[in-house]
Amino acid sequence: MTTSSSQLREGCVVIGSLFNEPMRVETVRVGGDGTWTVGLVGTQSERFRKVTLTDSDINTLTILDSAFSYDGDGRLMRLGLQAYSLGIAYEFDPLLLQVHASAAAGRNRGRPQKD
Image (tube, rainbow, N blue to C red):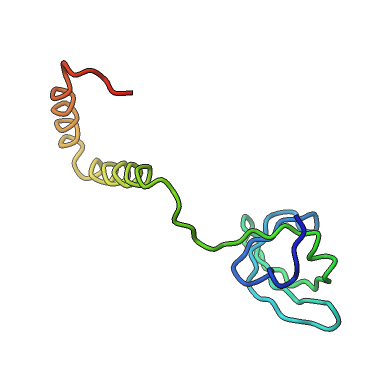
């Protein structure tokens, strides 16, 4: 995927052969003729690097946008939140959840399973 230098902005993640790990863009400054001074932080190592990139260097990179999207499955989100809250509840009262789980199992006896 080729990109233009106008897509390179703070907060996006950059992947390419110039770096050994995905890099998060912290700062972008316009340099001289077709050059950009970019402050990058490794997403895994958390090391800061300040590099000067030309337009041709930027065109070889893949830029992942960090904008939030809210087009996920709401049911999966709810399931994850319930699992998280049950995990926290279990830390404080393990017996309560055992009783609740056995009561829920008793309510479902005799009902056909939904697929």
